[in-house]
Length: 225
Image (tube, rainbow, N blue to C red; front, side):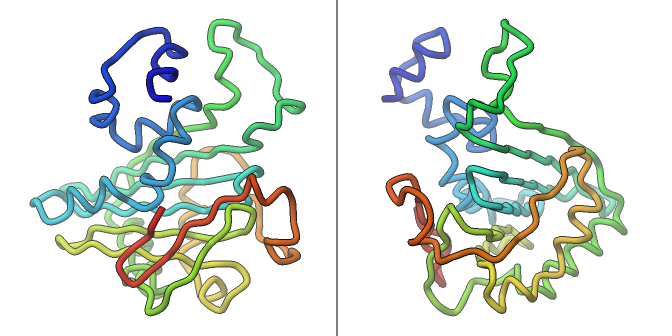
């Protein structure tokens, strides 16, 4: 399958090369996104780099029903107390009826989503991390649960002071209602794309084609995929 991806991208690479591609780079390309998405959300790269003397790294993903909208935020601490922030917004994945292709050179453009970057001041960064900590986003959960792709939820992976943590907040549980980092985070978002707000839904198993619904398992050891 990875060989097929290489052909679609217009070149051929040995399979071993794909393993070296960072998760963040993989999700930017709509062709390779599905190969890297689960590792990206679980923070595989963040976990592996944590404890090696690198900067603090936080990754927050808002799954607003995967086929409707996903927002991903990477924050990497910088000298002086600020942070480099990368925002990614993907929407209407696979719904070709609503896609208009304006650039024949880049026919995958509509599926790439929007990626923007900005630098946070020390004050902006510290306030956001304080809200994240207050919400319980910087510790492992105490129980196991699953989050389905056709629901609303947050995942948070973090490397703070050399310690890795991962958790999730599933709508409409009390954990989701306790989230206080969403408003300050969205206020810093420069994507220009409106947030898809959570809404009341029937149980996940009663909606849509279950063959197209995937689930992440959240445990006291991290996010499994």
